[in-house]
Image 1: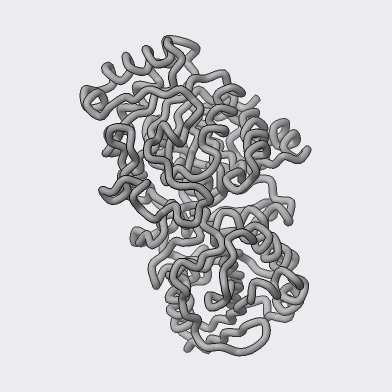
Image 2: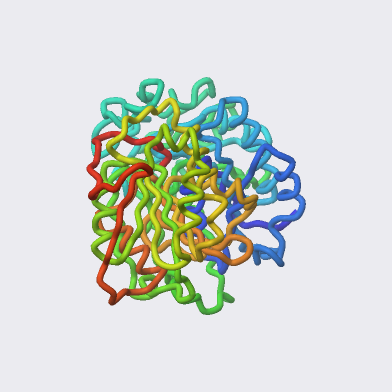
Length: 480
């Protein structure tokens, strides 16, 4: 098995890509493996990563991130996906189970499956301070309000958990309060030792990134007294703490144009919430990749902010936008594919769900698969693809038989540029992300600045329309 310094297991692609991009602060290359329940996972476990495809080889600084694509899977399938992914990270002394910072998904089942497969005692710290998501007295607060008192679980089939421990049920848990965390690594290590001795999963309060650094250091110290293998459970912020603890790669060569420079992970963290305003890209990251002439933008969400992004993009450069009526897309994805095949192989083409059509959350997965069926046959006509929403991105890449991504850079918060086998670029971002100018900035990063006046067109599958209007709360994919 390949030597690893850090393994990360995430339940959706956009979160996995963000974690992998943050690892570039410490390592020269970072890879995302797309784990599946098919025999392909055996090939991935046996042959990836290797020096010829991912550049990590036996480098002891290597970081590998695995996307299980399990947040929307049925319970039993999610557990199997996590068990399969464990084979890829078993040699890493530290493994982070990256979970949604709003506690969505199969949290308890996936943590239990990974802990059993790796034979490690998990330590849980789900806070993401950069997003004002902190845990105090075992309760997750979002912007100062307990999660279960917000409407952030409005589209979920069950109420939000009132405590982190409730999200982990039936795992037996014990709280490590903030007062203990404030006392430092030694105090938290003692609490973790006691939890492991008595068979409990420790749930740690945290309100700052420094708290997460303490939890990470304590978890490593506690596992050193056992078998030296650590399992952490938390949001991308905890994965960042694990990255910060890695020694810098002194042998890193020059970055490619368009790749981000080193920066503190906290400055770019947080691809997990609707309406997040991205950090301004650095002067280097704002430069064009250089060889991209065309980009296909596929939006698998109808988040309220997307119409404004599309409007600003259309004012910035010539853009052909195809708005899809969900029912027609499900019935005939081939018609959309044929329409895309007629487009020139230059410039910007956008495929988006019609924001004025009724939303049916129960058909979200089917709609995602139809969208993937429509765009995947023509994706190679474009130099780059922007796939918004982890579920959408994963569905498209699965249809293209893509098993891993070589991460290039995070150009804005949660917006990650990677290369798929063959060299074409793929940009992933959570479905609900971005301020009004974010799409225009990403396109400029890929294609470079434009001096031509925009002549945008926007089409439904049945008729021409003006700039779309948002339907508040009408999202078909909430996988940020």
